[in-house]
Length: 262
Image 1 (spheres, rainbow, N blue to C red):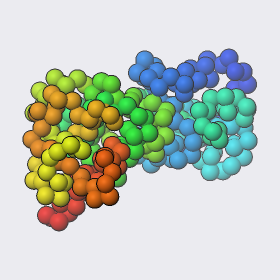
Image 2: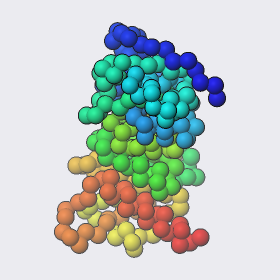
Image 3: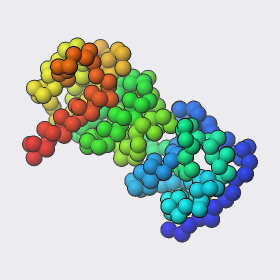
């Protein structure tokens, strides 16, 4: 790949920087703009590793002397060099990054009923959602469905918590309960109030793990449509697990069973 010549941006009022500040500060702006802003070496490298097309790279002036940053930025169609102070103004991190990518929001994927899935029912904490996506990518669940009311999947906070998981998953958001029920998927809900212990329960294949709102759990309508409800034994006496921790345990149990059966 031939390296594009970098363009220097010196004004805070530059249209690109204005647009990126909106993306960084408004968690749902990507839905209107069709673009995603990812900042930091780890997320940029994850996008590159997954073969994501990079529309624009921004690099701070001080970082441009770093060969690793220049090599990473070279995967973009365009490169902009930005004074450190202006780059820091874009960042929502406590310690501002020195490189960021502008990506096109992926086209909406169709749900594949033949694949295992995760269904998020109004999970609202961005950190929880990002952690769940990370577990899904790590443990081999290829698609995640989100019902309206969930944290925006491509928001900056969810992207940071996902640590690059987004680029390896089929993500479908903005669904309502009727959309999900019409698919006829094998829903299995987690509950802290009942159901079979996870290690004893029969699990369907393919499975759609269904995780609910942090306080309210899975909605009654979805719960009624589940083919099974499971609980995670907690001999330590806690009332319930964090939803992201519960997701990781359930996904690992699916992986463990599949590995033992093969």
